[in-house]
Image (tube, rainbow, N blue to C red; front, side):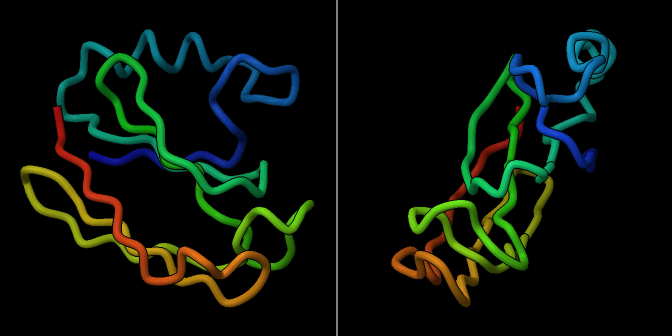
Length: 104
């Protein structure tokens, strides 16, 4: 199971306000493999308590020239997923880059 939320799920002031509660609920649920989110316009992958956190890129504009504008294609299996960046503007250096994740 992959959850989708809008706001970032970290510990900053502009993150999802009840992020600690979200993690308390999903950590024991082994079916939850990843949480995808956006809002920050920063493309990155991280992990918390074995749950992959995927911060999707902006689809319209970035706040700086370091980040890509585009979308991510997900190729999912029961064991993990391949996430392919399709960068169409901003920093396009990583266009086509695949990030491979293995589920917990």
